[in-house]
Length: 360
Picture 1 (cartoon, rainbow, N blue to C red):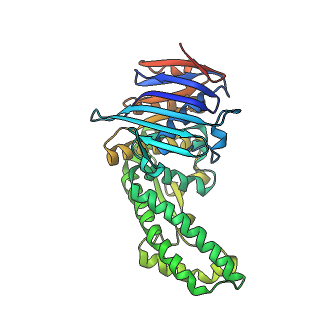
Picture 2 (cartoon, helix red, strand yellow):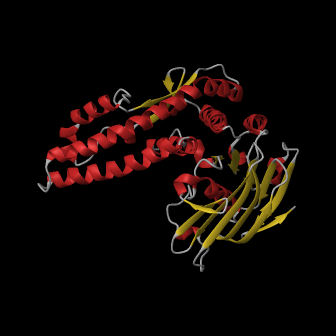
Picture 3 (tube, rainbow, N blue to C red):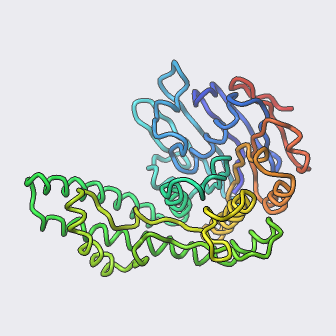
């Protein structure tokens, strides 16, 4: 996949951005809070129909305006052109090749992999971030996954609300059976697709880690805290039944894929607890490369890669490893120091200042 052009109007601090891209690497240089990340966010919007940085649509509009628009033209591996348009005033609208569509149908047409400094803490912070990582990745490769995820979220919300009503004697316990079936149906599919990604990732994750870290240690990943990782509908229902008394007590669903965690181990020891900072960063880099290969394998398209000021967070050795492994993709980079781009031969560079972009 190659992004040919990008337009953004009233998006964040970008009043009227118009860019076309000719080189494999496009770099945006400038001080912090000038709008570099906003450009990458606009590209991400083309992939998902929503921001991965904010749940507030209003925050995406430039202050003092009542709408925003983002448009992108791309070309896939087969040479087919793709045009994506997203506009938001009172409501958000989506167009794919000139035809109105939905956000869920937009996802997967323009695959991207994003890498930002906060990703370096993926292993150390809340399990919710790791579940979100899997959801973002798998939603791009499987519409079934995205639909199941949306249905699961609705069922979980309704089941928890019902648990609260039962606790107030406003509903009966047997009403839970309907939502148990819904959770089991969608949750088991989500669990199976997550397990499929980890099966794909097993060998390349370890190989990439060893290349980046220059260590021969064995790195592995698995889904944990899922009470045995049972993912069949029958076992899912059985486990919900086992946990029902606790669920009723706390008015909350305590079993399911929404409780799962993605655990990394190095030499069979928890990486988050025992790994060095360098080993953790090598793991995240290794995971991002697996993500690129997974999307390429499933979609038969090379995803576009977005690197948001990650060079300042990596030492020289890991910077070099990063560039060696990704230069066959179209890349968009932000950085505060133009010297970080010295490793890249074929590139075009823009200076970003107060939302304005000028080619250097």
